Image (cartoon, rainbow, N blue to C red; front, top):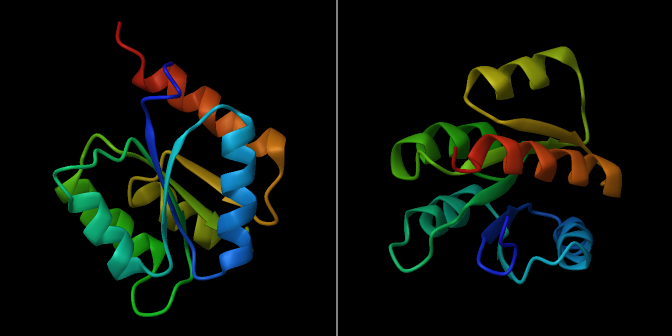
Length: 130
């Protein structure tokens, strides 16, 4: 995986959560990290032609448009994007809803470096060319 070429989107309405996840991703060698503070902004970034978002971390609870709503529309706009839902609530309905909507992973807040590494390993295995 060529980490210095991949583009990552972090969509979360909490600035501290965006900063924490970005810090972990930078420590893993990722350079291109975009931030969105709400679902509409995340969807706009996913649809941009000049940026190809490879991985999107979408908070499930954001004002206006939930991470699940963004995920559903992202599958139309950027079907090859590896979308991960993040939430402070790991109840079965949230996890099931995220996976049924097409999420490739689910991370429970607060962020834990190992959980993020596990998702990145899954991304590498699933998205690597044969």
